[in-house]
Image: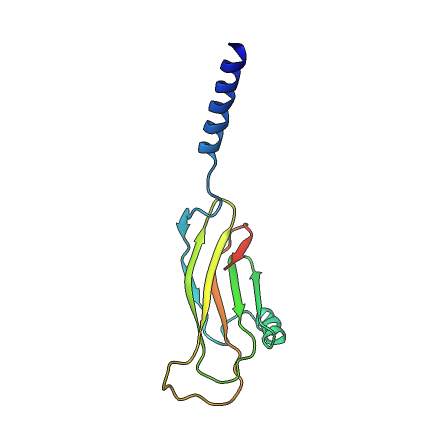
Length: 133
């Protein structure tokens, strides 16, 4: 009898513990952000991005008040590429930054010159790791 009570009690404790856990990716709030125009990034950050642009990158940079989320998709064979921001949000454990590369539209006039799509998003500084998606 005691074994059965202990087993049922253990199962209930286990189940209640599971229900109290939160999803680490659960969105607490959307973060407000500004997409920086070319040449508007801090000089030191721009220098770093210029060095990394050919191979692509995902990185952060911070100053006293701001957090910069940076993503580059490396060399593309033509012009006409852009980067879309799908989501920038705060979870309990991290900041999530979701982007995707958009190619030239069908029929769009492009130059056969290589391009280096890069996006810099500036948001408030929050001391959490950033997850790029």
